Structures are given as C-alpha cells and as structure tokens.
Image (tube, rainbow, N blue to C red; front, side):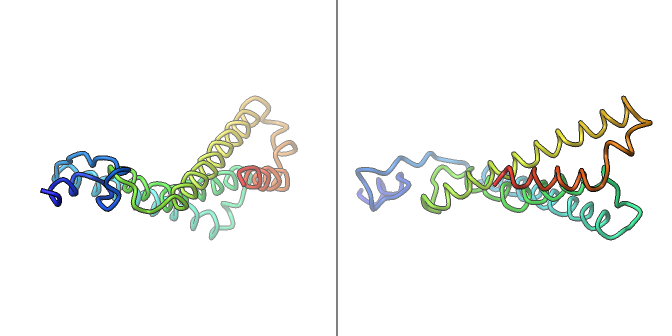
Length: 157
C-alpha cells in the first residue's frame, strides 16, 4: 500500500512535502513531446538557414538585414534553449532542481526581451523607409544599426 501511494507523489521520498502527481494519458504525453520537439527543431533549423544566408552572402549585408540577422539569432536561441525546456514544463513535476529553474526563467526572459526589442527596431527601420524614403540611407546607416543591435543585446543582460 505504501508503494502504491508513493507512486502518486512527485517526490515519494518526501512524503509530507511532495505534491501529488496528476495522472496523464501516455498517448497525449508522447504526442505533446513529439509536437514540441518538431517545433523546436524547425525553429532552430530555419533560423540557422537565415543566419548562414545573411552571414555568407555579401550582398545581403545591409542595415535591414543586420536587424533580421539579430532577430534570427534570438529566435535560434529560443528554439535551442527556451522551447526544449517547455517539454520539461509540460511534466507535472520539475526534476531539474531550483538552480536550473531560475536559470531557465532568467535566460528565457532575456532572450524573449531581445527578440521583442529586435522587432521594435525592425518596425522603426521600416517606418523610416516608408515615411521618409529619400533620407533613409542617411538616417539608417550600417554603423547606427550595429550600435542599436549591440545596445539591444546588452540591454537584455
């Protein structure tokens, strides 16, 4: 009877302080793991293609594409670090410890913030290109965009 009750808890050796493990259907859990893994792999692979394309071809080295490169790097990091941990968060019990939990949330918060700031910078770039196209080359230069991207990454840390 003790082992039967112990299997209902996340941490059976801490009987008094452990939370109860909810019952999950095996097929739903496997489907969720496969779906999250596929989304994560697609995110990593496709953003890696964007990173390689912009970094390799010289004709793609423009201020706008530098912003897109920065966004692709952040989305690559989301697919590499943030999404796989969503599989662990789908589990009813967290087995990786308090330190990994804190590091995950800090890393996820930082990466998502950089991604949001990159999208804002891309929006500003497109706004200037549409509303003031004649002065766009003088307002948006490679050096200014590099400074903004660098500030964006420093801001998140």
